[in-house]
Image (cartoon, rainbow, N blue to C red; front, side, top):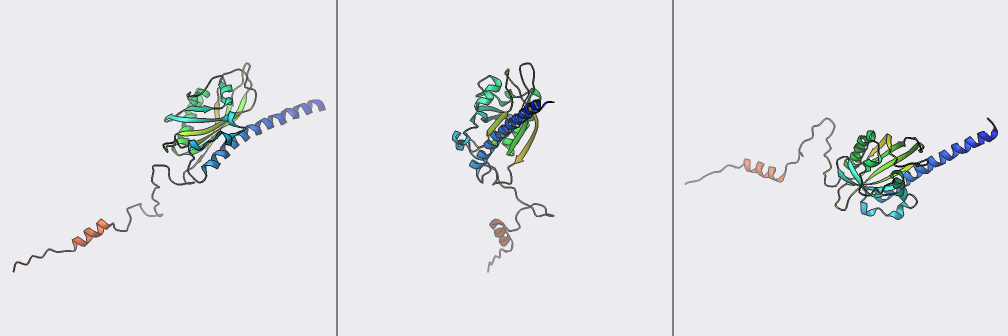
Amino acid sequence: MSNEDKNAENNVLTLDRERADTRIAAIDKIERYWLEIRGTRLVPSRCEVDPKGLDGVLGHAFILERITAGLARFRIAGSHMTELTGLELRQMPVSALFMPNSREILADALGAAFDEPATVRARLESRGGFGRSRLEGEMVLLPLRSDLGDIDRVLGGIALNGQIGRTPRRLEILSQSRQSLVGFAGPRHGTDRPSIATKGQTPQASDAPTSTARTNAARSGLRLVVDNS
């Protein structure tokens, strides 16, 4: 191989790494923004998401609304998703972006985001073919509260490298990682913090008697005495 060929190959590898770095940077920025508005709470609210905070990555970002268990639809979809499908995605189910063999995996990931709740990151692929190069990328799912306080929204992002080519493109989930948020903040909205049992003991009612119990105990020690004299 000539030096010229080696230089060309190195340039291609460098470009691929730069694209991968750009892809990861977009997903990282979306997640950092979510962490910033979250603060010390379990999850932030949808109303706190400001497009200005996602400047430079808006095309990769989206907002989902839960429909039912394992299903969610786009409320907002960035231009990157529109380019992948060639369609306007607003109100469409997010599963429309994925191959059938990945839809059950996606449903499980959405369930984790909404119900645990948890953050989810996934590695994605879109297979190559006629007029299409293979695409690789990442997705992130970050839970949000609605105005009513329920965790039924998601701030997410998808970023892929390579030329999109002929559309529509469909994605497959290669792997995923999850970070449960329970334990990192207070209890979920509308739920009580579970009681903590000491090791070796069975969880039970408090040992301290209630006021009702004390009153009943006191009454049990009284005797009725009748004096008819």
